[in-house]
Image (cartoon, rainbow, N blue to C red; front, side, top):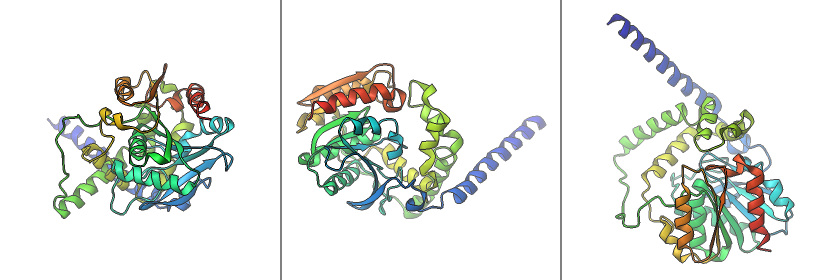
Length: 328
């Protein structure tokens, strides 16, 4: 009994040290403005209710591909793909969807699919170059699809890469999120922030989390993980990620692209690039979306999982450029 109590005491001590250590780390690390923390290769544009951080490459008058990254990713995580797209004659505009990367976080903490879509649309309008090819990966696929449905005149071709789309069943009843007691909400936010600080934004765990999304774990090198960690220096990152995770997990919002069936009304051609080993958003979801969309093409990428652009960049770039070449 004494041994058990002693072990329990040591475990509690270690856990307390872990939590307190992370709290101190957050204070010490998450202290820079986006402008101070960003690498310097991008710029900020006014977009709907925030200032979006974008990184642009390619000739100013070239046709535009807008990239919307997934969970935890930002413009810099396309590092293995941008050069190939630019060399094929396109201008790349990679967008940080908040709360990821260096974009401003919305004051009302609204990370709904529709709000993110409005931010993408505002960014596209600011480019002033007519309809664009809009590509959304994983979480970014929802806002990309929503944007294409809200204002189809701005999107000439939609590309979804292992997109997180079919979150709700077709016959699911309407839902409303209860705002609850303000004091309880503040307490819940404090707990969410602590949880994210001890897991999601802890640098030692970045590689672990990345490995959960790929089939080829050998691609998760320290250099790759370091790219994903760059935005961790931005003020209140753990708190913002907690806000986003709570809203995303609730899955309760009126969206035009909530189910595969919603794609029946898509006004532009759709290409789906999908890893055949994806267990996060399995290929069955891609087939359902492709079957519903009026004009669609499903390209299955062999030997990769949920993040094909880092698992096999050469394959991903080749297949994407093949699609882009047909649009000239």
